[in-house]
Length: 136
Image 1 (cartoon, rainbow, N blue to C red):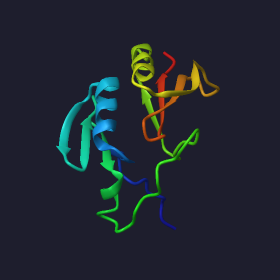
Image 2 (cartoon, helix red, strand yellow; image 1 turned 180 degrees about the horizontal axis):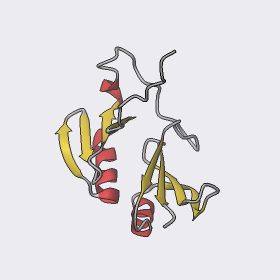
Image 3 (cartoon, rainbow, N blue to C red; image 1 turned 30 degrees about the horizontal axis):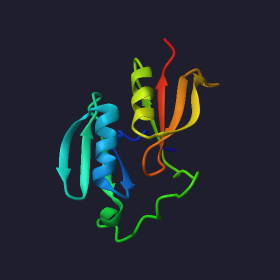
Image 4 (cartoon, rainbow, N blue to C red; image 1 turned 180 degrees about the vertical axis):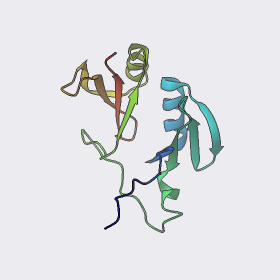
């Protein structure tokens, strides 16, 4: 019987589909101010301080590599099934910038059962953005 091995994979890039790449890019630029490491007509990729990346892919081209078209963005009060969870040392300026840039607040910033202080919002495409501060 062989010993179970742990894969050496690491998450280095998260990509989400967006309806309007220019609008979404302006939103993430204004809220987070990350460096754009790729900026082409159908895709924007940001470099996060951790070395990981976050990408926005135009929904119309998102399925280029897979041959599959992603489902449409939600309408009304619905959200996508995507949650982007960001730990920040000082979350309050980001919460203010989210609100200033049209993010819908889903759940106010506060203590969560798992120990984080976190607030829930949506981006222009209905993706859930969580702004959290881990307990010290």
